[in-house]
Image (cartoon, rainbow, N blue to C red; front, top):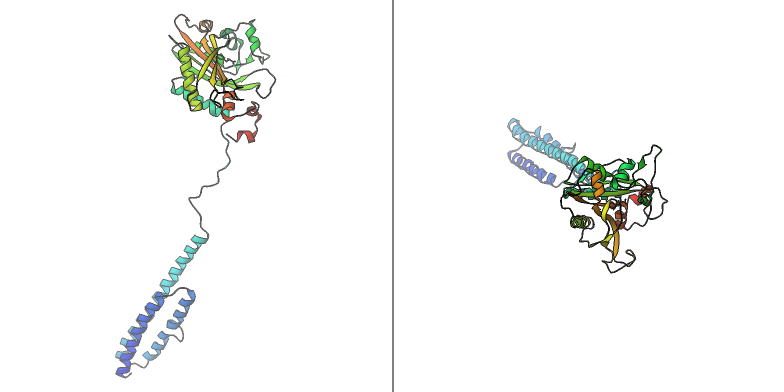
Length: 348
Ligand code: DAH
């Protein structure tokens, strides 16, 4: 039995120790501090152990009152240690998250991919411009016959105009088309007016190559056939096309030009985009750059396609795609397009 006064003080001590434990544990900053508090309260020479030693001196009633308080202190300390251990574990995860983090918003590695050839890019652009004006897109064979490439285009067998284009002839009498105008014939034979369409594609010429000549290049042929189609419609459509391609208003002029399949035939020039017409090396100080040949479809061509030239008229034009891309990007050698040179191609 412990003397009453002493016992009362003892109870106060345990209560104070309990309060102190709560505040001491709330200030723990690291493992060592936690460990030293653990041994202070629960260690072999710790407070709890000391109190348990006193319990043996108590009588029965004192034992239960005092014992309960000491038990509460032990449980409290155990709980506080658990809480700290858990939160330290959580902190370890936070540490990993800050030292070994993955930025899930970072863009990944883009695998190298190819892209469309600059000629194809401009071809698609032109197709979409014409589609928006209600033109169809026609396709035709690259291996052609004499009839579609020459004869029906008003270039008969012995016509001197055949010398204008040097042709790759195949051993079977066919040829590699020298222009996309051949598709005009196929289109007008397949469909009757009103008719408007374009035909982009590859063409071939038997000629020596240099910076401005290739044996293989690309054109877009276009045509429109209906009642009352005149050169005014031609000019309008060309101006819309050029405005869309160059993204600005372009001045054009027509000069007479000879092509067997149009009458009258023209060379369409555009106001030099570099100097605005004042004269510069690009336009050879003329202020104008030759861009595309065109004209009113020759009555003979319409007749070849069973279209009555007294009822219908039309216009046609032939646009060189290589030339257009060269003008747009300032490319000075046409041979780059076929070279397969990646340093060149990857710029577009
Ligand atoms: N076919 C011609 C060539 O390749 C270009 C051409 C000229 C097409 C006048 C046309 C045209 O439609 O009207 O040189």
